[in-house]
Amino acid sequence: MGRTKKNKPRHKVRGLHDASRRRSARARAAQIAWTPLKQACGCVVDWGWSQQTADPLTFRNWYAGQLTEPCPWHTTAVAGVSHSDLADGVVIQPRGTSVLLHVRKAAADEHELGAELASRLAHLKKTTERGSEALLDDAPTGFRNWLIANTPNPAQAWLDHELTEIILNRGHSALPRELLERLPEQLPPPSPASPQPESAACDICFLSAANGGILCACGHDWSCHPGEVLQGEPCSHCPCTNMDHAWAIAHASKGSAQ
Image 1 (cartoon, helix red, strand yellow):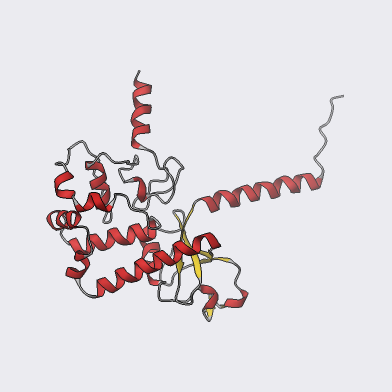
Image 2 (cartoon, helix red, strand yellow; image 1 turned 90 degrees about the vertical axis):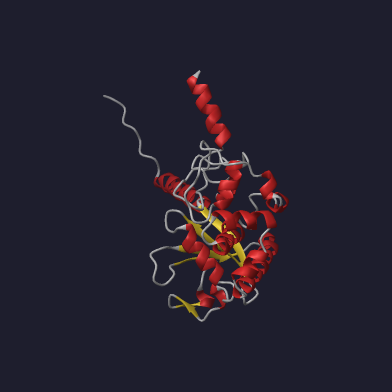
């Protein structure tokens, strides 16, 4: 007679199942792009979005609107639940949308960044209230001239650029301000071979392409992705889910052709 395989003890099966669930939870958490914000109540919270349940522009607009609002733990109620009963991390569906956004209490090492981003966002909002001319006055001279010459609404283009860098890129700048100040002297005529991403908020990607900057396979500048290059992070401006360094792609293509 053949030998029969013994079933694993029930506690071991349960342990494997629990481990699998923990791995799945970690994988889902890694796909969320988080940006801290100091809100009106003084709390710093992390707001996050995942490409599976939201889009970057909806997240950007929601985040900007939270600057003058208290955090979920200091509001009267969220989805019928008292703030005192909320967990440290919750999922929120903004009214009138089908997207899901994430929010959690920020770790202490994120408090400084959350306050800095709130300050930058407040300055941008105050400047916007003064009109298009005041908004453009905040832009580096070279970039402002480039926007005026190349975009139908330069003030809106600068506003989109700033909101993207503050919120989607966690305050990181794709190009140094010094370069943007001297843009007319440094920007060569665009090459037909340069990738030209199509997006309402990617003028910086065009500049990066023209200056030989780091571009993803999707054509956007690396800073349009919330994470590090080659880490499989989603792009802020398009459905691209895997950030690939353009040089790495070109290098791999050359290797396969040999």
